[in-house]
Image (cartoon, rainbow, N blue to C red; front, side, top):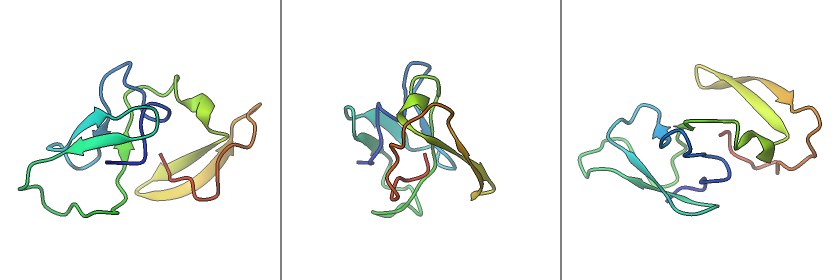
Length: 96
């Protein structure tokens, strides 16, 4: 189970995928959570591990956030405010 689903990982253009793990399949779990399925042979996946989940389409989810994080090579290089957005992100909001 992951702490991300329909509100941040739209499925209207296909299912999201986990970067670097083609063998992991994503399943929607509702508005707040998703489910990851992977074979027992999958190496390097641990409970609590942070993963980059790539959504298939961003237009329907972008309105949920007041900031956009620009990620390159696994590092946040910049943070752009979304013009007209209310402050909705908590300080502990994961990069999505």
